[in-house]
Image (cartoon, rainbow, N blue to C red; front, side):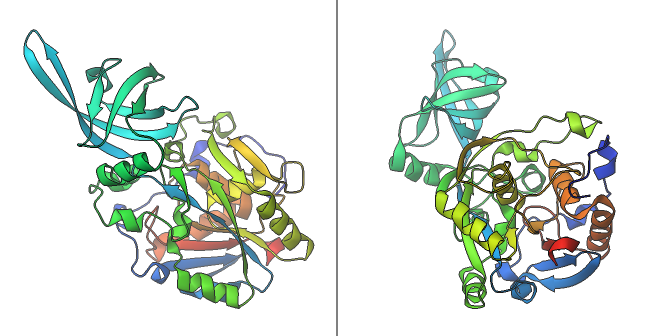
Length: 360
């Protein structure tokens, strides 16, 4: 299905029934003990993440997304003095993305309880004024900037767990560790690149010792990654945009691996989407900007030879992406196997290594 002409696709083509008890609410400990389904073409093998090196070769390159998740969930108070005296309202805030003018776009609940110009106080050090409202989002200007803002946010904020985990339990202190990769560097994501949560430094060192190479790219994962597809005709879906960067060094490294016959395997759909964005001309080049690339069956992959990824939501754009890589029939077999063998699903769940026929 790689490179074929896309036909009309229906949302139901990417649906499946998932038992509720397979949704993971905590990660495996240690990280590398998570299970890993390996699909090489039509062959499926059950393994664990610490076995990853058995399926990689010297000269292969893993592409890692080094974005850093910010503790984007905040709970604060809006105080107001009126004829009735002092009144307060509890306001829950989820930061979405920084704006060019220095404000943050955010979801406020309840938005109607905050007027333009009013301030929400989160703790003794952190507060924000509502400056603008558009498309159901508030634009907040915080009282701090730069490192001071990051430090205050780390104290006041909670990690922005995905809706399917947050519905089962609140975020806690352990999530500050669990919902962050060991190579997180550049702050800006409001969702983790979850395939990378399975790595620790020991595994990275072991892979490097056997000749596996690494490149880092940055894509700040947005809350839109959890938005469901609502249109029945998949091809009419409008993707959310996320900021990303492929540095000249990373582009050169990836191109060199391709030229040398090595395989380029992104860790996570975010890394895959970014390097394919940077290679739309056929070969990868340095790139920076907002990408809304939508990958579905029929897509021609210019760079990725495989993918390490978690198990995704039914009827999601991520299911469409992995279908494009492996083919829809093969993906159904992979997910049927994962459910039958009780793999753990979604952000804190188990992993898979997907290598289509041409790259085995």
